[in-house]
Image 1 (cartoon, rainbow, N blue to C red):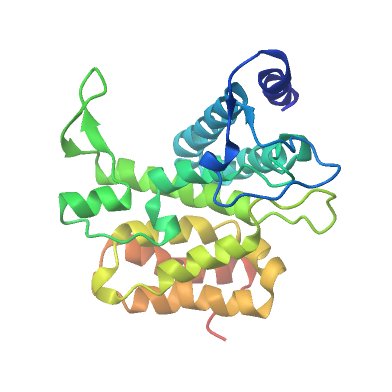
Image 2: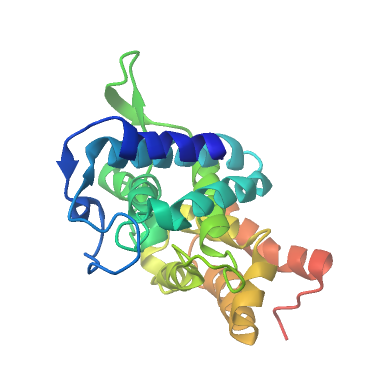
Length: 266
């Protein structure tokens, strides 16, 4: 992690590069504040590029590692949050984690409330399915397999939870992507009408919950338990499809009761 910080500092302070308006990569424009780093109207473009490269690497790690072993997402999430929460890497005191979330939005749109039909090409694009590519990386007709897609979505769901369910109550830094975002994502998925549900949603939702249910409960207590009941029991019960993705989310309720003693039925 120290090496990452050193590279970002060098990109910002050591190597000259043209200035750029950071608002091009943020959702909102923070006001100037006294006593915070990077308080000017611009930042070096090489620095913004460095954060962009870091975001790509983080997403790639979630896809390659957490997709196969979801429990490996947490240390990756720790690194991601630790960097984007650092005041010295913020702009006017506001985290630039929106750069990372833009990558999440591109790879796993379901996390941001996007819906689509997996029976159409357009629907698959909306859901983040990856097209096949030739040797030069150019897209060709066809899509990756269901197994590959499910692994990618599992990695992103677990990765999102590892970032958004971090406890900053004892930290001096501000949480760059607080648990309210996790809640909003869960709500956006579970509020989907039955006719618009997709297997991708069930895969992502399961990955968000598994291994992170206790952290969610720590954040929201009894409200989290009610939300988990909606996600794990009520949501799949409304599905008109009977596929492996739906079944795996239903089974999660039994797994939580067996492994953690969490009974969502009562």
